Image 1 (cartoon, helix red, strand yellow):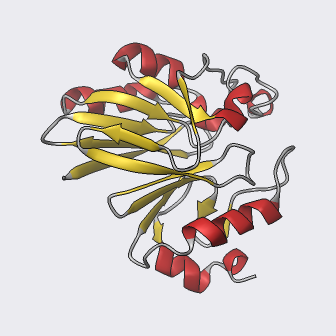
Image 2 (cartoon, rainbow, N blue to C red):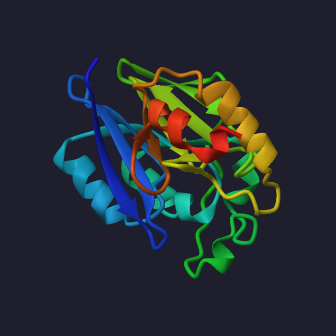
Amino acid sequence: MMIEMQSFEVGPLGVNCYVLWEKNTKEGLVIDPGGDVADILQYITAKDIHVVAIVNTHGHGDHIGANDSLREATGAKLFIHQADAYMLADLKENFSAYMGVPAISKPADGFLADGDIVAFGDSRFSVMHTPGHSPGGICLLGGGMLFSGDSLFSGSIGRCDFPGASAEQLISALKEKVLPLPDETMVYPGHGPSTSIGQERRHNPYLSM
């Protein structure tokens, strides 16, 4: 199983959108298409990727802006945790009404819960529910990689000053589910540079509290 990955920094808030795909099956997954759909689609077309799923790590507007256009272009199914599903179609609930770039999305095709599996080709990624930045925040784990959305960043964690957010809840979820992963697990967050579990275990001040 050989997974290829391409990241794109999309939208005005610089969201990391990730395209994962297998060379042998050509099936793929897109995580957090927050905007700039033309760039994402150009890559998908050039590599002849069949996108089978789109996953939102949470429902904030900067992560969902290209959901509809990407879904229409690829025929992929959209998935999100049910606790954030209400944000998709509500500019105020997903905070995009205050970001300067309003973003809405049609309803998800399915909901993800802790322990669920997201599959494409021969690849399997498990869902970790890590609420705190938002009620339905998730991470995806597979192939030695953790896609952490806005739950975990290099040297930091997601903002917890939004309605429905909780720093205590987020730190607890990260310590319980994420920190036990092997040191060499690569972490690809929703914003900013990649890191590793070992790096965060040693140097992230929020996780040593």
